[in-house]
Image (cartoon, rainbow, N blue to C red; front, top):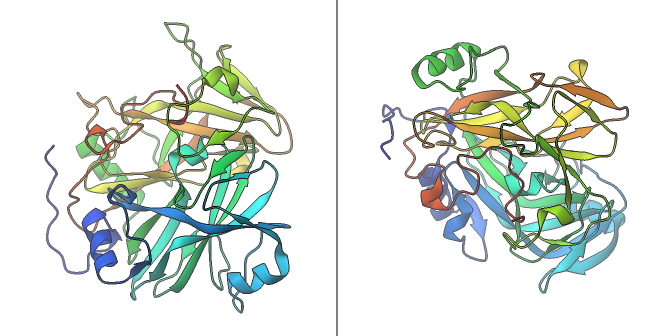
Length: 368
């Protein structure tokens, strides 16, 4: 498909697309001992691979400004697990795994991590940790050092191995424009959501779809507890009914604490090839629940779906300490758009094997 050209501006602020990520690899700003696989480089992000050893730790932690992750692991690790032949990460446990990728970021370039879409849809809580970090998932400009994944399966135990890809990294140069003014102007040109007038206030609002479907299909899925093991690297290997309970009652849904749900947005989303998008953390003042562990939307998501119809956002939902009633049409998140620094050479879609283009309500790629 054709891609709208970006004006050539030196050191343009924005998200780095695949060509820039490949240059970072060639320039030694992304350091690997095992060569990066072509499929790791997504349209505007890099998939990160698990290394050889998982450390079972007592609790989640941040190293703080004066320590490395390795130094903290010396006191917090309970035992080591060899991932070379595959190993099970059990629900309710916390693991830390050094990744195969390291960084030597230049000045002016920072990075932000999220679980991959398939990881979030399995309720596998995954965050990135860097040496001397005070925050999860954020890598400051000019950072040099290793990267670690904190992994805590919440609902399903998972089988992983060296090279498994659970999270992804997006690189950002400078401070891109994320303003509501930019989003309004972009919506006028591109119709970012395709159902009604948009609510733009700190991002473009997405609402939950709990309507009865014409064909009687589920409005959502509730994860079954005490299900079987899921191999993170096997697509289409599992019967969804062994792991999920379809939800058919329309209109409203009571979220039970500790339960995990897959729902969908009412709006169909479009991300033009010149931009990337991210689901921002939901305001806890309007509901005690969390939506969307995996918040990246690559350039081209929903854009090439045909006739401007877009793709709905799949929502990974978990209530907090109390039951919460979710109503059809309730706002559950906001989408923020950022420009790319240059024209991407690939966009999200079937041509690169993307799993969720033109999606409606859809479980992770592991289920048939």
